[in-house]
Image (tube, rainbow, N blue to C red; front, top):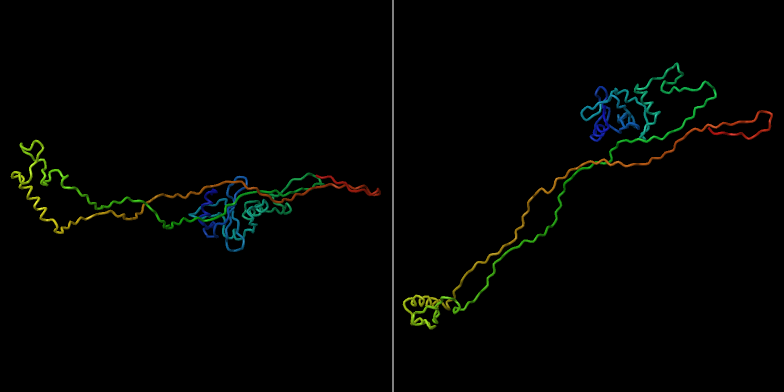
Length: 294
């Protein structure tokens, strides 16, 4: 037995209805379920033979790949009576279809054209009247509302970030030679002998042979004075570099959620009301008829 969920999937996938011998009757249309049990009972198919879709019973139907194969030949489906497409089959319409497909007993000629399905029992009296009324029934049908397609598109946006960068700057620090420890400036640099231990210091002319080495350095520095020397120093700095890379940020799952809500339906129904009218016997004064409802 085909379930309602299977029929939903086949209709969403665009399946076809196949006859009992495997011929394609047409695409799956709308699904009709039983009002009481919710079991799939009928499916419509557009055979192209008429403007309205044909109703086919799902009793004995099976799935064949992505299609539904019914238990009836093509001729029976094409000759099925046309029914209203208002979303609900009345009891009379459903019985008419069931009789066409041989699922109800046929007409018995001996019973005066009444089938066993519609045979009724009545009292042994000629004064009997049958009262009928219409009843409102509500059901559901499955129809396609929309198709959703996922599309990735590229969005370009500007991103601003702050990057710390470094650079070298040249600063000149001037230090007097008198403040440089160990420099031979002619005023003494702390080199003393025993005779100058009381705080005195020797001049370059009064130093020993060690003083002669310092004197040579001083002469070399003096010799380069006013000669226009140039010293080249290379300065460096950091510069920000922008690069892009592609990284996966998230995975998206698409889920279908079933939402159930209640809807209130209303419709007009008709019913028969039986009233009894009584009149006075002939020869008496005429009186207004009296009515009693029933």
